[in-house]
Length: 436
Image 1 (cartoon, rainbow, N blue to C red):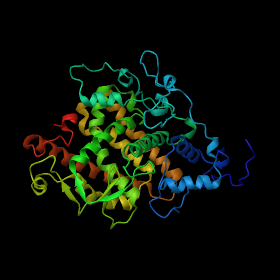
Image 2 (image 1 turned 90 degrees about the vertical axis):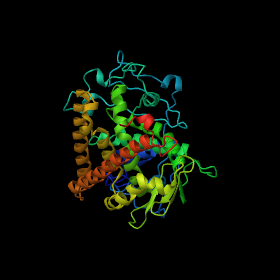
Image 3 (image 1 turned 180 degrees about the vertical axis):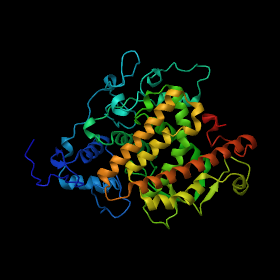
Image 4 (image 1 turned 45 degrees about the vertical axis):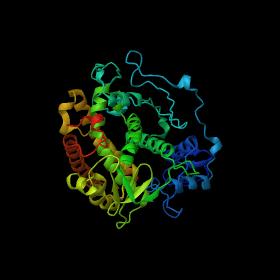
């Protein structure tokens, strides 16, 4: 390693404390990992502002486009990034409860446009050192955990999306490793969307965000079904989830999906469009952008009723959620790490549905919620020491409570549709989730 030339020994990208040379310059591990993922995945980022976003330790996750430009301008060398050269035959392995422990390192190969993740498996001690949450067969993969006679379509989807990640431990913060791994899993979902939702006229090979006037509910449902597999795959990178038996995974996914569907759309709308309170647009996963107050709703393909008639019975969440949640989301302006906490918390917050889980999972979920709070506290102390962490957690919780209320309302609408058949097609996926 060449001698350090930076007298302050700070990251050349975000001015955080550096730990050495990475790809030719002095940088921290987080920026080195960000650059490595960018080069390995061949993604393209687009700044939503004026290509001059401030990049520092408190704002380095706000704009990936400006961050990667700063990496290059500071002198990072893509040719020094070593991308995994393992062949699929060697990379595709499974976790067997008879031969492997949760501490084993497993390599995986993905089908998503060559995107390869190399991530260390979480060990039981590093995940939750205060509990024995991983002890017992519940946290070992067991494909025969349910009878084939009751295996649902959702079981099959989750099993098919089950992948084994390997994390590079050098990229993980020692203070909040779980949140970093969730961040990596979430960005893999974003990269998957960039590959799936490409416009016919796109020459960039990424999602193009375009303003639309008419919201087609049938198209919206098909889009969400395409995205569902990616969400199931993302959860495999969320520490603890992958070691559950399939029954518990399905129960968690059923609870998580609607919460994530709503909360993430509000977050992505803020992240992509900025903090202007008077901007009333919502962004969908395929890149469609709508003014939720003025957009027209098209239900011709799925209902014989008029939009006004349906609206009298069912107030769609994609109109209610922006009205109630966009402003507080923009005022809070959460970082990606804060949102990873929120996503993790809604995954493991099973207190209202404990009857659907076994005792081991209930205890494990409690420990996971406590650990996420501990990691978020550490993140505030290290990354955002000048901000009021207690207030910010309270505002995050308020957003999650708003999400919970909208999910309950959405479930009521699903039941109404099952009874009165407003829609001729299953746009709510109640056949998949069996909500009752």
